[in-house]
Image (tube, rainbow, N blue to C red; front, side, top):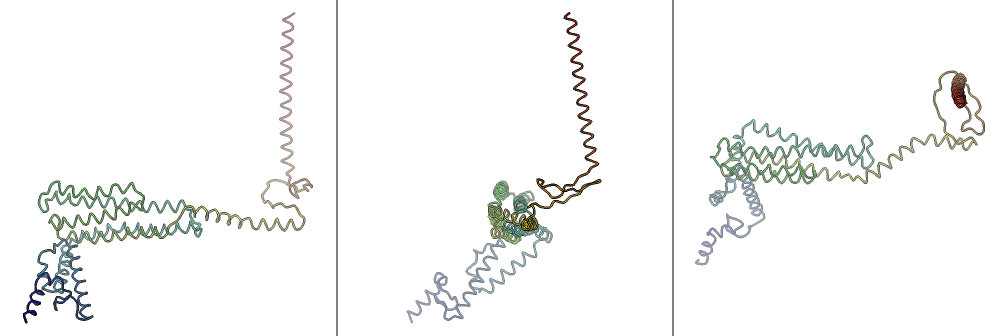
Length: 362
């Protein structure tokens, strides 16, 4: 009896209660698989309630033993009621405008994934509507739009704390809250000078850090109680959009060297396809003993005549325009006649000058 009493006393101490796996039986392990499943469910519920309290900005350190004695169901009910209460207290305009702020992120993420896929198709020679440089430029433009909007949004989240300070919400905190509002700005600005992948990763970390700062501010009473939950939902949506962009652009990776090779091969194939009929015609002409030349087509205006070109010519038939040839001949003769007259006049003028010089000498 004494040993049983001592065992019961040890099991009743707070340290022993924390070590047992089954609070109902006070044993270090579960009695059966059913007890194991129930314990796992209770632990999962406790973790979930802790996360909900953390998101809601509620300090769950106080009164934890009392909640443990009350049971997991009461903890879950309290967490759900707190979350629902905070959701009801959130201003509807803030929810609507916050959701609207997610639209640019979702749209740019979708555009980046689509353009990354198109760039890979062009690099592989499967899409000839645009060239590789144009597809790459469009992809880079979509990523830059997402990065620039992210930097602006982070700066806006920091400015909210300045608004709380201007309105003296939670008291006048002075420089502490002003510095708190500068943290997102200092994290966002350098990302504009990074490559798209590094910039998106950096902004993802900046959003997580900013949400943690907002969580601490909400817990300290520097922001409304619903603010941390509000910020958690928006940060989750933005973070998923950034991850989708990074994953999509990495999955549809397009190497420029592959684009050069496939592009050259595609152009060669198109050129061969265009030249195929002419090559076949050349082969047929050569097989018949004719001259290995391509046919050329065109239009000649005016009265024309066709005559045999001769053996030394490059074609079988020579097209002539007698009227035009006569006009060109007369024009050429006129130019030559005019040139001769000018030369004769120069000689005459030169002879007269020499005669005058001889008379002066005499």
